[in-house]
Amino acid sequence: MLWLSLALAHPPLVRVEDPHHPDAIARSATGSVLLEPPDAGPWQDEEPAVVDAWVAEEAVSVLNLEDWHARGARGEGVKIAVFDLQWFGAADPDELGAFTTHDCWTDPSCNTPIEVFEPRFPWEEGSHGYACAEVVHDIAPDAELHLVRVNGPTTFENAIAWAIAEDIDIVSISMSFFNNSYYDGSGNVARLIEEAHANGVLVVASAGNYAARHWEGAWRDEDGDNRHDFDGDNSLAIDLAPGSPRSIFVAWNQYISCGKTDLDAVVIAPDGTIAARAERSQTQAAEQCSPIERIRFEPVVEGVHRLEVRHTRGASSDLRVSVLSLSGDLADPVTGGAIPDPGASPYALTVGAVRATDDYLWAEPEPFSSTGPTYGGYAKPDLAGPDGLSTSTYGARGFYGTSASTPAVAATIAVVLSEDPSLDALAAAERVKAWAWNPDADFRDPRWGFGKVRLPTEPQDMPCGRRPLVAWMLLPLVWMLRRRDPAKHP
Image (cartoon, rainbow, N blue to C red; front, side):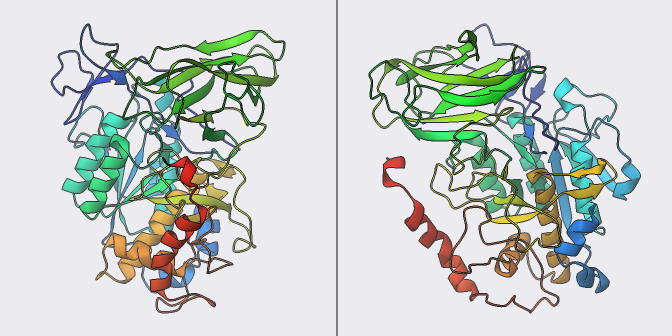
């Protein structure tokens, strides 16, 4: 399986809340991106996006789209934008039909075409964006297709503003943004998703592929050694292999009150030596305060490494800690809450992944597909779609992960929208939710939400055993009340 974790080599990029900074290499309406921290004034890291990869004859079949296509529902009149950072690899654009490109890095208005032979950064090299666009085109071939270069939070801000101004119906984004919030529906990324929703733009976002690479829980130090007790141990086991850089993010729930607590992170190698450490100081007076420790290193030996989170200063009451490993599975993961931004937003339509096979309706979700609820208590993902899709971009290897299922679901909503132009994209999404297949219609499953996307043969048909739409509208609240842990959300 292809896991494209492209934020492994930390970029030398920072963001300042000044759109007119003289050293800017990219801008948005509210800030600028710089190559290094400014001489004075506050700043924060500009984290690159991470593509969620781990056409589509398989998707067309399991989504039951053949009859819809035969009736002429092929996405006509629908404007779909694919946000991605990898537009700079080997791909055949002829597979996409007609499309336009938009560079939100070079031009804050996103009206400049992408120069496909000139990636600005090494993590942009690749064809992930084309694979996502190919899935969209195969499912909704008559939709108006836009390819948009988005490589971080600043360009995401530009892209959302562009989508609103251009009356884009659906945005498909198979990328994750890390370390911009506690993945609880707050922060700038979530604010932009809410703004898009308020303006009628449906953002279909991948849930991510981090179910086996995530841990979250309340701070515990029962033995008083200033090290977090992970399920009774002072460390968390992570299986890592040498040969390439690895990234581990440790965050805690003080994004609004950064500086109350200072934590450090240390990775212990299998031989007991310290392999890496992150010891940034978190103080309220600092120009750059963020409740995050980032570890990026290349293991020397293969095997189980152990992560220690150490308390160095400040309050520990009501403290919660999150760990995300982008490049190694955890021995004891916590699958719930493994959805990062933008999928953690309550205003995004968040998509998990199920293998596109003959038993798609009864298959379990992919073991890596991130599940909810989010740290904010939101029942996510909203839906699941098929992965393991054939594309010219990835060929016989197949296109896996929530990267593949997300454009499949976005394009399916476009097909429904073209069948009934009286709908808008948000209403079309609600219709797809109502038609989704869920073996237990009385329970919103944290693995696939309302169910696995599959359209009825006729638009007015409802799958056997479905409940009225009003019941589905109430289920998220019921599920949240059943599953929410009051101690988890002080």
